[in-house]
Length: 200
Image 1 (cartoon, rainbow, N blue to C red):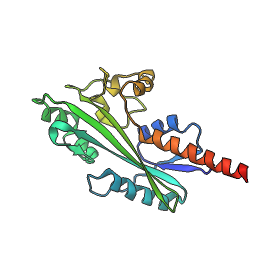
Image 2 (image 1 turned 90 degrees about the vertical axis):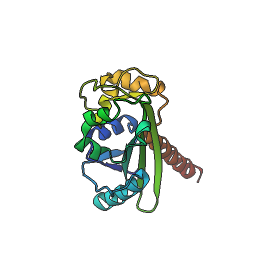
Image 3 (image 1 turned 60 degrees about the horizontal axis):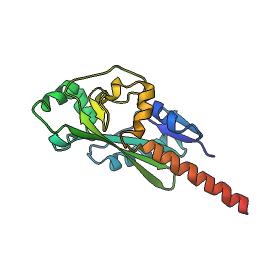
């Protein structure tokens, strides 16, 4: 099985990947990839994975995510880091002060590139916004939005959950994780290769 490199500077995303890639030959390469100015996460993930391949010269993957708040017409979408660096969590909560509709979701696009073809895998995690920051810092957190995001069918923010609760909530909140979708596809693809070789 070929080694796959996950190129990211986000330690929380790298930590999350470890959970899904236990059966894969994968390594993480810490590198801050350029992001085109766009609200299209597929376009951003494409640009990232092409740059990543130029850096590591191996089959690799890169991921981009956005955050969609229904009551704010989708804001901040793919401009999550810009929003957090400017108005921050407190600013987002301020914008939501008089909003009854607190629905929101994380959306992910993972791009895998082997030097010939790019494949895409998508994830979505629906939930609601808390009315104040709740929880604590942990090594799995890959965004400060964890302090205010309550997954569907849950009552705690992601930052309030223990590691055990974070694992269990995947069966509760009906979320789809792009990393997990990729892992399933890749294992199935490699198993198919092995079967074909065996038949020959």
